[in-house]
Image (cartoon, rainbow, N blue to C red):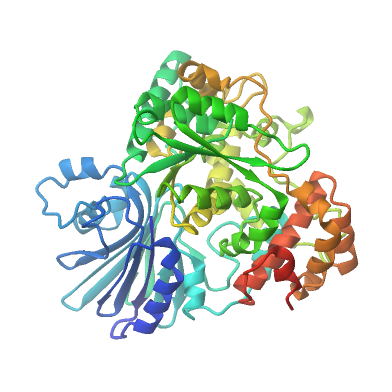
Length: 592
């Protein structure tokens, strides 16, 4: 896990070394173990390193012949690439990322189809007057990558803030993407909220020459083909092999690693495999972290998580998150979400990462289980025809009917509409609903949150359930093996019931919900006026109604609306106005 950035300039143009230095400084939090820059004619690459594999010799950029790579992430099939298609090649490092460079120099832009892992990669080759660059991102979009096209050429970076801080792109907000953020709490597709900054899409490889984007290729994270005919026993056996294979690959590291553990099915499944592999006992045993919330009525699964950790032989830590703790750190938490996603879960994720960094550099989590195994209730509703109570996902914007905003949010659902259209080729309503979330919600909310909140503390996040081996095992299963008797993740629950019975996967679950509404309600009298008087909020909403919203923050919808305004006010101050985020939420919002 690292930070990468660079400039791919037009032929004959020299890279601006000052711009590269500013990019490196902006991404320093992603790579505290070293920074290197390489200039190659009209191309310049930057790498800020978080050393996980080949601690002594894996510094980047790595150059082989005329080719150079900078990469953020992990290539889990590094050993099989070296022993297989790349057998006989001469390697300069033991870095898991170096084989990607060799594969590209052998196969060209189709190289990414040989990679298994999470990655954002930049490659460059120059020689005899020819210069070419490639940007590539893993199919699930676990690792982020952004770019900006300018007359001088293409600039890229792991985070938009590097393109802003270096002056490559001016600080501004796209009103259409802002409408999407306020309507959905995340944004979709290629365009970001910053005009001129775009995402390399999940699974996409972009070819660049002479400072211009020439071609794009894209890999799907899900295997194509019809719904399978398979027995339950065969499906369970295949899932068992896939989970063990994936977790074993995701454990490869030369540094200590840990686990974020809730009381739910997904992280318990990862823990069960780690226990089977013997990673949870003995000296240096696995450490697991769980969040709990100091709020009336908040769901608390710490007892179940502690029990599972004990059964597996893992050391368990609980972080009790209080309202005061949240208000003290919220400005910094929001500021790390430069590509904004107003997901409540950024709060515990950021705070847990801060704790975990004291002992480990890598965290495994259960992210992606709901999307691949069909865990969300919205999937079950989407499976039904309308006359049986079925309804489309995300049919209503967060602020609909509340009368808070001055205007409607035109086009807030445009990206979801496009994803739904793309998903129609899948075989069932359930697969189509899953595919929409895998295309948009997963990379642009859940994985974005994991990346930014962990990398704010220089911690690498890994997601064993989001692996091509697991996707191959479960994506084409019949709907009845994903949803049954009103429950999602049915096959995963069946597997976990055998692998770790103490997880009680079929017992009713409280769910993991951050009690942001309760916290806002307790301090609504102080927060409401502070949020309402922010110029960016006054532009969007009626100030008096904003204050009333914070005073009456009782239900789920009003809590979501109040949180969205609070998030956006803090985000705008940090990323657009470049105002300091030191101090608690009241000090930051009160500082004019």
